Image (cartoon, rainbow, N blue to C red):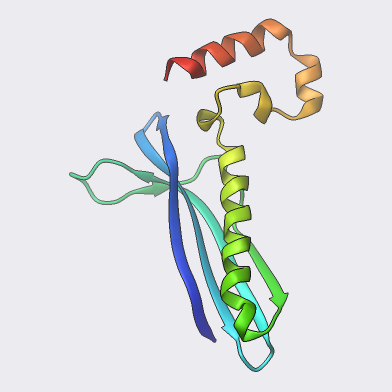
Length: 131
């Protein structure tokens, strides 16, 4: 297996009971030359912003679970496809992170939006706009 990319992108910060954390999306892509197969490991985590202590990573229920994407592709296309897969993952992690949205209602499932009163959406939107 040949390493294609190994990257992490910080999408923003969130406040958690344990302190302030960076929302991170990561990808590690390897290319199997014998099978012409690209394997991309995708993960997300919250990384502590406290530089005085040991680096701490935690998860949150709203973060997407780790995924593995496998594609049949030629070596010359593996880097571009890895980047495309990673960028889709970044969008997914960003959409799953409520604190990165001005309109909290946009991250709620549609069936839940229909049940909750409209006043709740306005309160959530106002609370997120204060950050």
